[in-house]
Image (tube, rainbow, N blue to C red):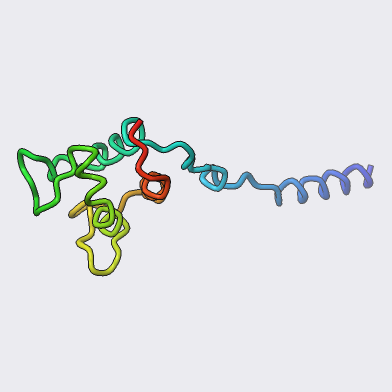
Length: 116
């Protein structure tokens, strides 16, 4: 009987040390085959970039509502969304984009700005 109790105590101690790591630890950011139409454009729309940086209402000199404009200003956009020194942090007044979104935009640039 003591052996069973001891065994149960040891097993409960062992299982109490087992934990499920945070789901975010297993999240993989897919930066393969990132293109403007299906990945980058939705990211900049969802993060409010186009609402301020468009051809109707431009906040500053940067217009981001087209592929060509985003390519032209990609260095400034990456500096701003990463909150790098020398760039105005964007989105203005809001938290920085999540790391995966930034990595997707970097991958898009590094892959030569695929459009579709």
